[in-house]
Image (tube, rainbow, N blue to C red; front, side, top):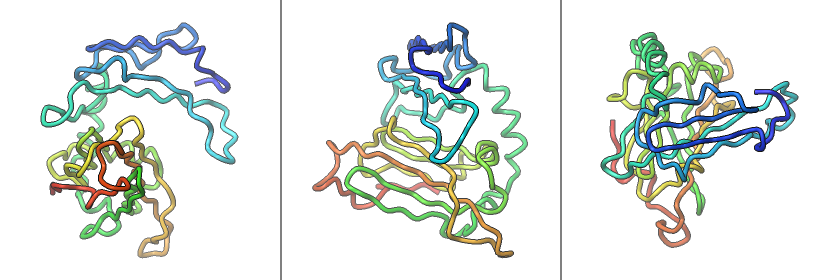
Length: 221
């Protein structure tokens, strides 16, 4: 959206089955019926600061839709809004034939993780097929609930690259992902990107010092 926008220009009306976000009094594309039940009190809109050293000519908005379902009843939404489903389905048809392992630089051991007292950091080196945020958005799906994490190729939710039930509860609003330059290089020596997941722990449910035995109590493959 336009550069220099502030929170006073945003109006968010969140309900259990729908959500509407206005910018400068104009309805945004982030409006309409939701694909699941939301928790209105947990929904929010924010203006993200520009990346360090970036002179962007626009501002970035972040919309957080808090799901009402947790635990065993929680499910993955293919899109936040029902009107977006045809677009998601079209993009997934293009990606669903991508070989699962071809998107990872090391298909047999595709990720590594480490933890601090309040978060888990997961690194997943990617193949040269994913070099931009647009590539990742087109080919990958990242889903986080309070008790689970899943990363899979678009259209292939039953064959995850990374998935499981976490040892403790996550603060979904504090979780994020990004692409970053990997220390690993491709077989031609080309620089590769890696997917970096920041998974914020609910420290109230963590063990001594916030330590978990591992990221997952049950891992899916």
